[in-house]
Length: 431
Image (cartoon, rainbow, N blue to C red; front, side):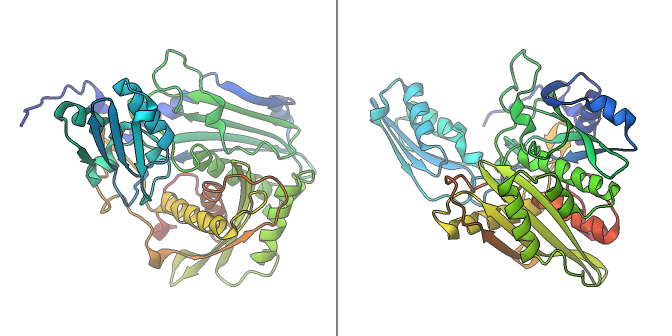
């Protein structure tokens, strides 16, 4: 019933185009160095072959099928919560603190959830219901509409990644520099303008490269960001593993063999790469109008190698099969490892070429699933996941399968078309 007049300041001047321009301009600023070995600059200057490429990834929303919702009942010195959450202990502590009651007097009833992907780690919806229940003295259910869910965020941060590399006269990778320009989840409001090392997540530091540097430039915007499945790995791995392929091409080497040559002292990466090469029939002659691409990542202690196969069918390129090998340590529940990896792959495909959050006049343009597209069952390629029978300690597998999807897909498209994709999402119909 309120007639609200919002003062949006200059926010209506912001758009996806303006944000991209801001990021490219900021890329010239002095970066925070996260890792450095050797002399990258001198090696680049002296190298026989030098390559530079930039990669762009958009904001993404979590888009769980179940929108954000909770029920909270506040009584005297007592609070009860019902809802799907990734963070039951955090919700318990938050409600107790807000209500100035003991955690023993907060009951958390959490249900199976229809999607989360990082979104349900937050306490914002629980806070809404708690405040309303405290004021009314009644149990309150809060349900966000789909439009609320898609447009309010918080989102996965968009990013610009700039990579430079050098190949010597013998075809060896002798230098690589990777710079990330993005917002930092942990530093959105402070006076400190330095990004934390987390923004470099997903950049493979295990490759044996004698001259290597990773750095970051912080951007601070009004657009809220938070954790999205695999977080910065989902953006940085696309850039890093795409660029590794570009370097392999410049060195005139097979991209899978190129990676193996840089990982001779890393047993786990070597094993997943060799496994996925065998299972995907990497070294066999390609069928006509077929391309294959590879990418690797370590996330939360799990190592993944992935091969995406694409085909040109009736003039259109389609991903037809994705083969993955995952080493999460001792496989306590192999079927769950496969299911998590399959879910990651579907989400990774959606983010690669189906959907993005874009800003127009300061607001999110995508209001519902008519504009924010999701991968349909009929569009999903065959997925073949192989779990490594490792004896290492068990690690997390809920996110590791997502980061390699986009680079492996784009590397496969390059093998088939010689068209290098550096901006996500791309239109599969126009490749």
